[in-house]
Amino acid sequence: MKLEIKNKIASETAKSIYAAYPTLWERFGVRGFEHTEKDNHHHLDHLETAYSLNDAKVFVDYAIWLETVLTSRNVETALIIDNFERLQKVLPGNIGKDEEAFMLRCLTSAIAVLSPS
Image (tube, rainbow, N blue to C red; front, top):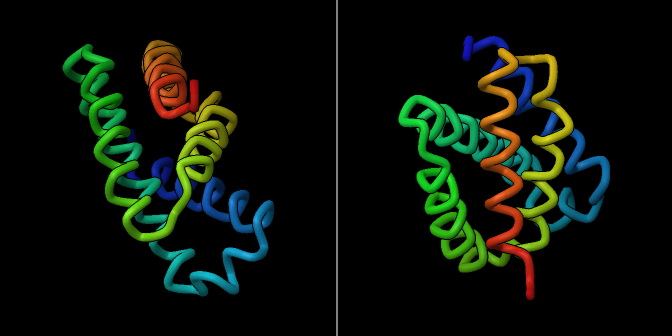
């Protein structure tokens, strides 16, 4: 994935999250927004790695680890799931069809693992 596309996806996703949850500005401020953009870069990096290895488990394992890290920093699992759902909306049309289909499946699998039973 080209860096400019990755930047666009990460930025659009972060803006969408903060627009939907304006209290995040109060809770985490600009620094939190910047971390949300960086986190989306990490999500995309892990999706790319999973794609290159043709192994969705790579991303699902990352999502499980991510939940542990972020919940220890008072970020609710629901926000992680919401972030992944937003990525599912932003990815289409921005990357190749095969890569897109694989990444959407990875995100769906990660959401299922993180969702309460």
